[in-house]
Length: 102
Image (cartoon, rainbow, N blue to C red; front, side, top):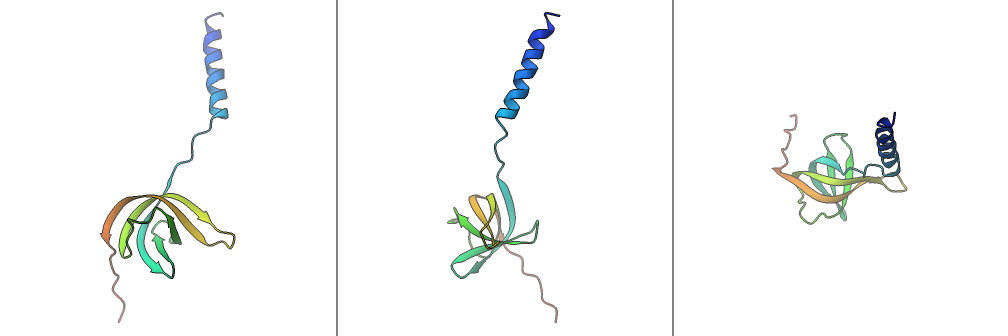
């Protein structure tokens, strides 16, 4: 019985540490094409098909490019979506333009 006590204590301490120290929040990612708007740039996310105003580290993000950005999705008090950019993860080049129907 004495040999199982250290194992039980280790399991108890491990369980307690998982509860006390939760996993840090993962950065979210968006993929899509960037367009301009008055006083901002917008990304149309391919995943949820929502528009997000891009704020934060946007210096390397260019209008007309398809990009992958990492950061955090947010909403302001009016419910407008924005994305706090932590970094530009990948630039895929120019957005593809869909042909319009005649």
